[in-house]
Length: 451
Image 1 (cartoon, rainbow, N blue to C red):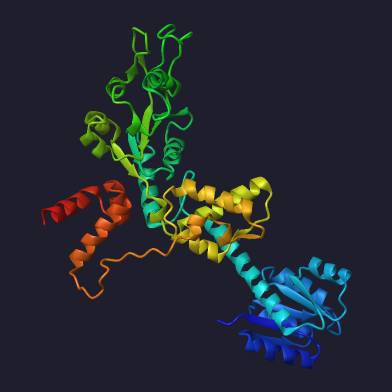
Image 2 (tube, rainbow, N blue to C red):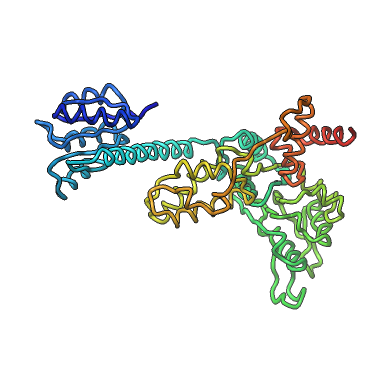
């Protein structure tokens, strides 16, 4: 649709000239000769921008601007006058005018001002829409998103939260596994008790064992005093093992015994100390493959994987990218007092095209960087990292040769392998993206390999 412009001027020749000039530039122009006619037309139609003369033979353009701003603050008003001065410009801006032009003017300057005002209106509406979407979007704890994979995830988490069963959270790095663990704790019956997290890849084996089980004084060289350990610290609450796939192989049977006996023996200690914790673990690794490679115990895997939760990668979440980007923008601008209000359409297109190998964590860093670099009231494509700007539109193609006609089953087979390749062979994640349960995906892959 053509942009709708209302021109208000008490001089008929000027109105006709602007209507003709702007009409040739692709605008749909309506006119009014005075304040009353302008208000009547404005009340009957939703204009994209208003162009008004300052002197209207009665209430002036500033009065009109103030009235329009009160009724529809998202409609930009441009004031034109032959008596331009700094005081007049300031008065117009204070009344809510978006821009100020002085007669005589070139038609090009009017077109530029209108185009700028239309972009401003579009940005204002988009920011409002994204803010509403961010507030109203479905979520669970700190998670945001309304894509089908996330809605399925919320349903599962809602059912799992009240359970005492062990949960294994799987997903790529940066997908929010610890946020899921915290949400399960906060929504569950243990919410008033401690949530304790440990990263299994951050500590060497002996120190990790001491952190988990505790130690007595003198149990090893640096043990100058006794320490209870994280199982005791989390007693009554939730103990979260992040990157459990990196747990040293020698420590795995000790953890398995502790989980089965519901007690731990501190290093150097002689007696068992009981504990009551819910265990939640997370990993970006494919533990079933790790079992085959001999780096993870099968019995521990089944002890931890009572309930399996798979987080979808950001590239499988569609428009959730924009909702999360707006969420991060609002949080960052609020903390820093920035006036950046939104994300341009060009930047949004780039964000949607990029595959986000670093997932939500990478998106947040991207928005933080863009916010630091932008010089305008919205993030532009030029503010994004080069690798995001350079991303081409992704295409899902069953076969490069469009002249080859293949059965539907063959199209499905090729697409499944394409998704599996995008997930780097992780079958759990591929099943999540495809909307299949893992058994169905495994059966299909066995059929394909057998064929």
